[in-house]
Amino acid sequence: MNCPHAERPGCLQLGENTVLSMENALRDGVAAVEFDVQLTRDMAPIIYHDWLVAETGLDTPVNALTLSQFEALNPHNQLLPFSRSCDDLPAEAFEPSALAPLVVANSKDTVRAPFATLHDLFNDLPTGAGFDIEIKYPMPDEADSVGMATSFEVNLFVDRILDVIYSYVGDPSAPESQRSSKYRPILFTSFHPDICLLLAHKVGRDFPIMLLTDAGMSAMADSRCNSLDVAVRMCKWAGLAGVVSHVGPIVQSPRVASLVRRNHLLLATYGGLNHQPEHIHLQKAYQVDVVIADNVRSAVAAATAN
Image 1 (cartoon, helix red, strand yellow):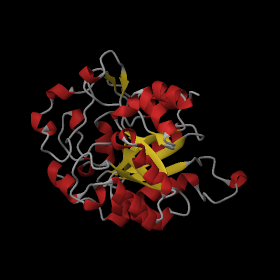
Image 2 (cartoon, one colour):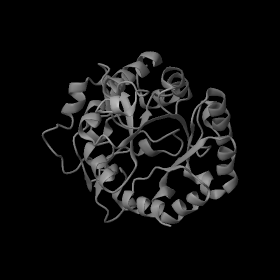
Image 3 (spheres, helix red, strand yellow):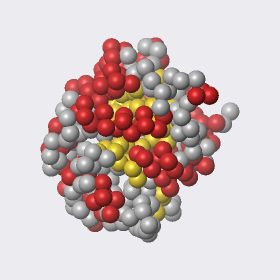
C-alpha cells in the first residue's frame, strides 16, 4: 500500500505493485494478488499504478519511458529504503476539484523494492497464486489531467499484454495435465469499459473479465462509469463475469449487493473500508465473492473466520 505515514502510523508498508509485496501477501494467505499493468514507450508490459512516475521525483508519464529507463529509476540490484514523501509533492496533485489524484506516492516509511514487469511476476511468483490483472488505459480526461500524450491504439495495447500472458499460460482450455508449468488462475479487470469489451471479445472464453467501478463515489467523464446500476447492465449486455465495486455503497446497503447477485454476476470490492474486519464480516453476510485489501493479514483473518 502507498499512503501518507499519518494515515497508518506505526505500520511498516511494502511498496505496492512489487514482487516483494506480493510474495508477502501470498505468505499471509491470499487467494490472488491484484496489480496494475501499463505499457512503456517500447510496449513492454510493466506493473505500475500511477500515470506518472512522480514518486521517483520525475513528473513523467509511464508511457513516455522505455523499459530500460523505467527500470533504471528503481534498479533491480538495489533496494531503496524510502522514496519521496507525499508531503513533498505539489499541493495541486491532491486538489479536491481534480477528477482523480495525480499521484499516489510512497511514504517515507515504505520499503521500496525494484519496479516489476509482467514477465517478473510470472517468473517470480508461485504458480498456484491467482492473478487479478487490472489493465490501466487512460480515459481522455485522465490523460489530459496529467499531460499524457495519446496512448497506444487500444487494440494494440491489449494485444501486447495478452501476448505476454499467453506466452506463459499456453492454452487455458487444455486438460490440467497438459497445461503450461506457468499456468495460473487469471482474472482481468479494468475501469475502462472499452478495455473490458475488447477483453470479452478476445479472451472471454479463456478468462473471466470484471468491470471496475467506483459506483458513483467520484464523477467520471464517461457516463458508463458513474453508477453500479450502469455497470451491472453493461456486464449483462457484454457477457462479463461481474463487477468490482468501491466498497462504500456495498456496506451502506444490502440492496446494492443484491442487485449484482440478482443478475447472476460475481461481486468484488475494493477501498479503505476493506481494512476493517467488521466490514469484511458484513460483506460475507451480503455474499460478496472477493474482497481486495492492502491490510492482508487482518483481511484474511476476517474472511476466513466462522
